[in-house]
Image (cartoon, rainbow, N blue to C red; front, side, top):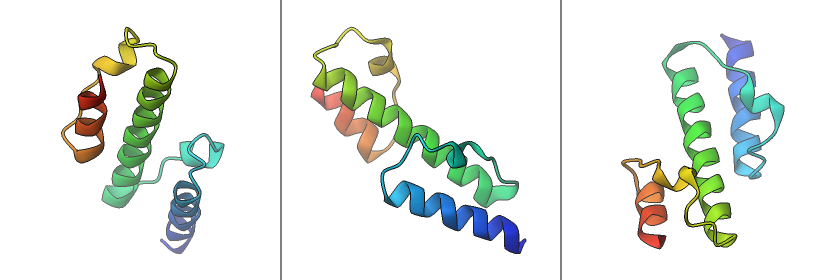
Length: 80
């Protein structure tokens, strides 16, 4: 349990530093908290890809078709 919390702490710091491509974020942890972290990383990476597509004026990019249910995904959808 303690090592899992340590890994999640490291992952939280990577996310806080906006280092979403760090390989340490690919290390899946067990349990509900691990699932939540994995989903958060997936959503943030998708949002980053959507923002990059918009910045590149690539409005036909299929990444823009991915819809979420939250504030960030809603903001992304309203940009295109």
